[in-house]
Amino acid sequence: MSVTPLQALPIDELRQRTSTKWQKYPQDILPFFVAEMDYPLAPAITAALTRAVQLGDTGYTPPEPGIREAFVAFAQRRFDWTVDPATVFWTGDVMMGVVEILRAVTSPGDRVVVTTPVYPPFFDTVEEAGAVVERVPLARSEAGWELDLLGIEAALAGGARAVLLCNPHNPTGTVHTSQSLAALADVAARFGAVVISDEIHGPLAHGDVPFTPFLAVSDAARRVGYTVTSASKTYNFAGLKCAVMIGGGAEQAKVLRALPWEVEWRTGLFGALANNAAFAPESDAWLDSLLAALDENRRLLAELLAEHLPEAVYRIPDAGFLAWVDVSAYGWGDNPATELRRKARVAFHHGPLFGDEGKGHVRINFACSPDLLREAIERVGALVAP
Ligand SMILES: Cc1ncc(COP(=O)(O)O)c(C=O)c1O
Image (cartoon, rainbow, N blue to C red; front, side):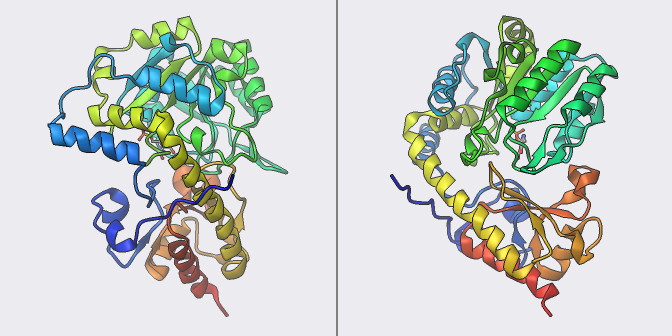
């Protein structure tokens, strides 16, 4: 059955938003940097939040906000992943969950593997936990990018204690295969290391490569792993604070239960209400129409780049709404986003923030109307037109 793609809101409405995407730069600059989307909220989320506002229901998150049950059901329905409810905990946001788990499982100065280029807060978060970043860049493959399992093995053999995995990967949009996740779990188990899998982009896999939750991949993964995720990216409510932490088994659940009380208290009530509404079956249709819209845009971007920026290197992502584009052929320097903002009045994300591999790259958020995406690439294309 074909699904009608979700329609982005008109730009006049979007400009009334007060979030970073629409406020950081002057109005003549079109924003494609931060990972916020231009679509209306899923109706069940709007209803839950509207009701809360009408009731003045703006207090603290209760001890049992329903997130555990909502997430367990969502994981089963969308990923065929059976999660033991006793392993599910919650906190304010994904990076908060990651930092607290890192603090619990590493000692100051321990090395933690991150697979660059990667979501920039991964670097700060490892440091915030008192650990040290060990970069093992993704390997280039026929299919795009993949985990450098030999590099990770060497890092763990050399004493690194944990791997902070991005699954699916931001910014490349790589959906790691179940084989590579299973191999990662085996190597971590061999060296007694921990894997923390950030799966915030999981529900946004486009289906070319099936999304595999790390903890679903093997017994070894469940022995070494934690997952941190939230509906906030998929359903576009990053400003509402709530994320889910899942331990692979009883041991990890013990670690999560022993985290300071404040970790759970940082969960925002609106974040919990929005996650519950997002994970509910009534939001599935919205997610399917979002995926249909993103599928069209990820392909449209390939066409636009071929027409207006033929030297750009872009691999259509397997998940999400972020495009990792190498524009180094155009000589806009290590950080092309700066020059493009100045000259073309479009704000892309700065490639080098994602690691050295990001030099000459921009990250483009294509969760917008096809017209806006077209205008952005045409503006940049005009800079290089003969
Ligand atoms: C991989 C990844 N993790 C985490 C986040 C942010 O999550 P949170 O705001 O819940 O910390 C993002 C945001 O784009 C992301 O791409």
